[in-house]
Length: 260
Image (cartoon, rainbow, N blue to C red; front, side, top):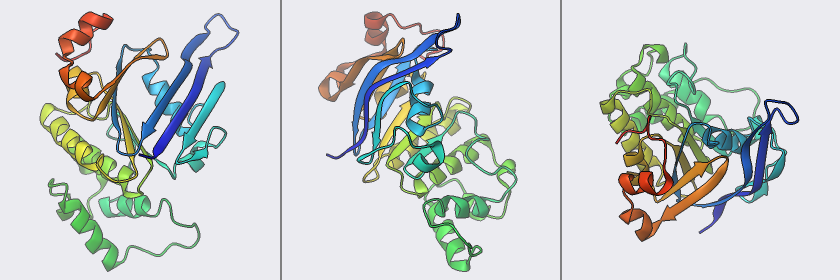
């Protein structure tokens, strides 16, 4: 399968040369293939979110190489990489235009990879397409297209954000604890949609989670990060046989925030 994301010897240091110097990522390498759905676990400060921020271009890196969809993007700014990356954050308010309607948000998302210039308004054809697409989420959003996003529940908003993130057909989908702020029912629904969307062709998914059951239940690979490094990368039968208890015992993970 095609490697959609290649990370070679990635190093990121905050406050280099100061008393507060922190090595967030240390010589980290990772290959992610088309169809891979990787769950990422690790203690607070292990470098999980920093890794996603470096991939997306939010943080410049100090050393290494980031290749997305076959092209070296290491020096590309965030706005250029955004054409190839979909992101969903922990905060349901991020990722959407809060004071705009659902259909306006979808219009923005669908135009993400189109050439800039004079943009036409939302046509009836657009609205019909949005309605059909939203119906597949099974959350009733197709009947609320003229409603402002700020009026939606957290679960509805996060489902919409996830849907918008994959609308532009990114090569890489990055999910940073995107269900942590939701109630259990809403979280289960968003994870169900996540699994569905992750099966799209020519896309790979990386999901940070503190829920270790979810880390082993969803996707096809699980990586464990500690001190800015990947110390475990399991898939196949090894992953199928892994349990939460074995993870904790083997790697002595601080499980204060992990749901058992």
